[in-house]
Amino acid sequence: MEQPILETKALRFCYDDGEEPSPVVLDGVDLQIEEGSFVAVLGHNGSGKSTLAKHLNAILLPSGGQVYVAGMDTADEDKLLEIRRTVGMVFQNPDNQIVANVVEEDVAFAPENLGVPSEEIRRRVDEALKAVGMYEYREHAPHLLSGGQKQRVAIAGVIAMQPRCIVLDEPTAMLDPIGRAEVLKTIKTLNRTSKVTVVLITHHMDEAAQADRLVVMSKGKVIADGVPKEVFCQVEELKAVGLTVPETTELLWELRQAGVDVPLDALSDEECARTLYNLLRKGRST
Image 1 (tube, rainbow, N blue to C red):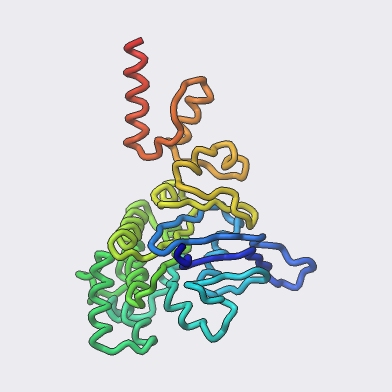
Image 2: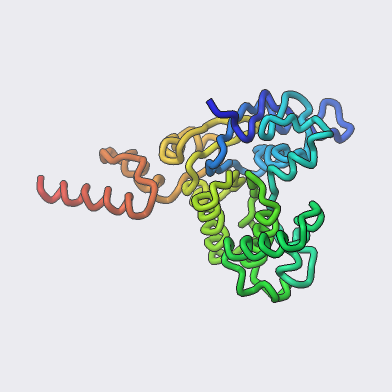
């Protein structure tokens, strides 16, 4: 079996704020993430999902257990640069990641700091901006862009580093629906075409539903892990920890509660509509 690109073993973390005892934020998290996969980590505020994200490229180090990036222990200081070359991070607020006054200069910033030759930087910047659909804005001022466009530039800046994995910590939290759709499309395309491993931290059900695998966290623990269709079928369990489910699943679940025999795994609008259509047609024929 191939070595996972990201792995946590009994990961435990407490923020040391001087209190006794310190509150536990991550409590024995065991995860393996395969290279090339698209994994969403879902949870409400305080579930530990963003703290987990910061462990995946050694922004935070474990209080207990281990985190491995392509086999490298994040606690090994000698491996820190290589770990951060392997895993790029995109955060909630794109304004906090934009450092230059011109889009293409901003995307070039990280490769320049890594000592990449000038000709290679030019190629990487152009490719990264094309990958996120922002090449035509390469000479624009970032502060004049929309929120969704800024976030795509931030993603391009990470792509230009050529990481094997990108961790996005609630990248659409500050965006309007159009911006959210733009960013999610960019993430999915990047994963499908460039085979970059994507870990998307989110509290949006519709975003989580588009991943290949869904990990649900609550109170610092993983409480569900599987393909989205399977995880979202666990409606009662998710509601018990304060999470909702996609509107399609909620509708089918309510029909089930009313005694109607329908499957819960029709996740997309199209699948749900087809399920309801077949139900109505069946009702007419009986």
